Image 1 (cartoon, rainbow, N blue to C red):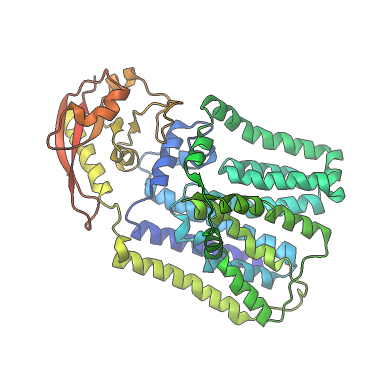
Image 2 (spheres, helix red, strand yellow):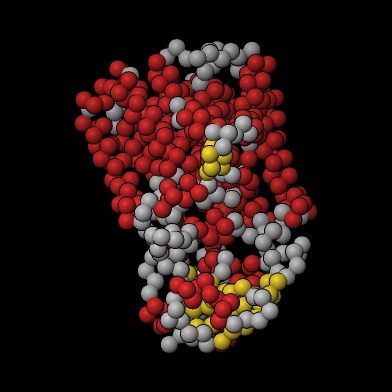
Amino acid sequence: MCRLLIIVWVGAYALLWSVATIFFDPSVPYDAVEALNWAQNAEWGSPKNPWLVGMVLRPALWFSGTSLSAYWYITHFVAIAVGMVGCWSLAKCLSGSERLAWLALFTLNLSGIINFDIISYNDNYLLIMLWPWMLLFFYYAITRHTGWWLAFAITAGLASMAKYSTLAFVGSAFIATIMVPKVRVCYRQPLFYLALIAGLAIIAPNLAWLWEHNFAAFHWVDTQIKRQFNPALFIKLLSIYYPLLFLWWILRRSHIQLRWPVDTNKRVLLLVSLMPLFPICLWFLFHHGGRLTEWLQPFFILAPALLVGCVTTPNEQPASGASIALIGTAALMLLGYSAVMAANVRNAGQKMSGIIPFSHKVDQLWLQRYGTPLRLVGGEYLADWLLFYAPSGPKTITPWSNSTEPNIYNAEISYAEIAHSGALLIGHSDKNCTDASFSKVLAQWPQIKLDAISRITFHQDKRHKGYPLCIGFVRPE
């Protein structure tokens, strides 16, 4: 019965949030454009992330007519639902109490990482899905059958191919296999080596891609960080982990005591889970990065389960009123998001909404001029959005370069393809639209000859004034 309830809860959660975001969100974030581009390239890596981010979006390209925006939101919340079940399962395993597991799960309702905060990212939602199961499988591997090492290796490998920060957990687990005698016996078990092979097989293609592409993902990370004392780190941590204060207060009011576990296995799991945070936080204390919250947020999915795992009186049950209040918080979060978007508070409900009619318009201009679907686009920033919203589903003509390391690129583009399919270019407009308006793309492809140039006004949304853009047409053969 309990398993049915958890499936109903997370299923309803994923369904309601998927519908709300599909209906209210004015446009997808730029992370969705990136993920789509990486899916189109179908390579073993990307300029920011490993290969899983793009591969998750790849199935949307297999069927014509698929709503990419709906696919984006639905996959996010299905992944969140899987992670929520993982959180409940980890909490149940560590605490031995279903009531405490539900309390840990409902504590997530106080955080935005399982709803509106997760929409903007093309990688964090995969960590939310995989990290709880990864640590649960690790715990099973050291407490049950050695076959669980294989499940841990596969999950850890996939999570590492969603975001490299997962490797911090892998490193912690490796240290545990060296330092803890009870865990060290794994080196005498053949299944452990099978697990190592499976994990390396998942990661190895990305290592080869990084080598061939000048380790572009690590260069991107360097551009996001500068050396600077950063006391704001503590504010960021509080903004992420504040729900734990509510969980601690609920446990205290219910006379449920917390203590560092006596059981060695639980201690090992807690250390493996917490060790990655200490060097990461120490690093960011002396380095400033605008994406600090984004990088730290996924760690919270583990926190409620780990906290209830420290309960010393599992027979004491938390007050049912606390769980009811947290369920009410989930409803308030959904209603609050819907109200903010519907009322367009601070332009949240209209932000970048103009990109959709703009994409449809330029796609139609191409079709009217040449009578063939738009296959290739290039030029300024807005051209990237056409990959996602233009009905013809074009690709970019930006080639990969180890010197410039473009974020959006085409791994297989050639001038012969441009000459055959033609291309639509987006250029900046000063007073007049000329070849010079497309200097960025013409520097990459000097062979290109423009067939026609038009001027069009782009309205980002109702709050911002429109501004002119230049549209260049490269005739297809």
